[in-house]
Image (cartoon, rainbow, N blue to C red):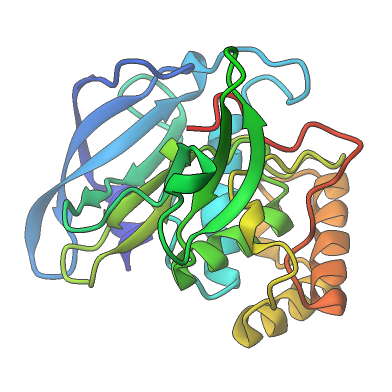
Length: 265
């Protein structure tokens, strides 16, 4: 099981990932990943490196990353890389996530471009203009993997689904390439916070397999989330899951709150 392998792996920090708002480290992992002792890469985010935020409790992002992965598994999707919580990480407690192996054969799934340059078949999420008055849109691929990610974000109440948080590739070297959603720590707030570049899926039908899982979560949030979310957060999660299951479609962009992350890419 990949979670057990991550939790028990020997972790060696290789270096800090530049440009991140919180401390993020690339690591070498040595352990048993299914075919004897092997080495993989991972992404480690220590709690002590989290930047304080106004609307999320201090030191809670690493656990929210783990809750996001567990929710994805409950929904039956693989678009969120396996993530565990380390009590004794190299730099203290924090989250450890399987590294996403990028695939150069896949194009980036989100773009900002003039309306005339939207790729054929792509969905427009939002429109705006540059400082010089040029009309632009945020558009994304209609790929089924992105649809599953959009549904996941809606139920997780993800407040930061930027285009750069969607990577073309896979965390499993033996699996076919797909899209992976990373940086899921700003999720599970009790108040509506959904900010995403995937609004092009608004009104699209939720996949049947996910709808069944949403029904189950609405009835009773599983215990696997109990140690990572507060009772109020689990209650809000159940309400969102129930609404998504009932309506059966991806929600539309709200007009009374900020709904696009900044920067979008």
